[in-house]
Length: 207
Length: 206
Figure 1 (spheres, one colour):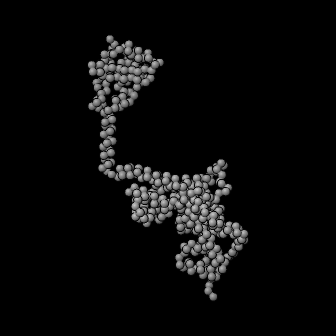
Figure 2 (spheres, rainbow over the protein chains, first blue to last red; figure 1 turned 90 degrees about the vertical axis):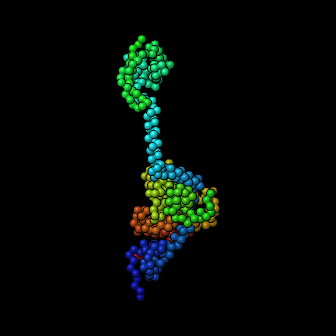
Figure 3 (cartoon, rainbow over the protein chains, first blue to last red; figure 1 turned 45 degrees about the horizontal axis):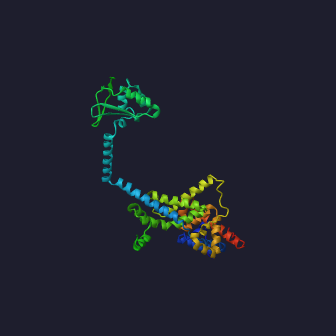
């Protein structure tokens, strides 16, 4: 009589047998075991038939709008990647971008008003502070709103100061007007910030 | 417009090539093919695990968002990479759901794994199911399986994953994965027998 095969991990081997994941020697082992143990044969057949039923499960289709959203997302992402990804991979394009960026920075430095470059303590602020020894209204105005104060040089080489006040603060404008245009002279040597900008202080006395 | 010839050729292209075509050449048709190829299996798996179409839609979209944005990092030559992403997203959801029980969002007591098939868009499929009571009961019974057992069954059914792959994906040993499948099949068998008024006879082997 044939010897009954020894299978210590019979449960695992049975499942592997059902799912056809055994190597040939193991298949032989399980089949021999089934010959000797009818209960094992019944169990394996039962597992097989149950799995066969599961194989009839249909597939579900996701809602079409979800699939379309995903496609749109893929198109958007791919476009971004094409632009940015390729840009970074292309040394020529990268160099061009760097030159453009550098040029923009330089031209911005030339074109921006000096008060933007120098921050809050601008030329206006400093010149006004010097004049402000005689015109305190300007200083006060600056504290309240610097954007309302404009200083510029006219064609007749006079420095003009323009001020726009709010309705409830018109006294400052009146005060400025009363003091009129002041004759000013440079108090400090001009500091060259760029070919287009000079930083210097003005001072002057009332007529 | 895509020619019939190129569509046919895309059908024969493997996932890896589709990914390359999409990533390198901005080939939208390649991505569409990738989606068409996997969407039903992925969606079925997610839906079978979460049992809610709204959540399944969210996880499905999240899965493909990751596929799009992390294609380079997540693509796996071994295949089943999209299922891996879907599985992880599903498990993340189930863990969060377990951690934060929302009293207002109770599970639908009438939840049926394949309720989704009753949608108008799936009339044909619904007709098929109505004709096949056995299939209908199978669907109900599968949704009654414990999550771990359902997971193994679905990964095997929809993605033909080997038990080694299932074990790796679910972070368990191969024997645990095999055991879960075995219990899933035994439980389903019990459910069928109960449904048909049969008394299940358990075979004592040892």
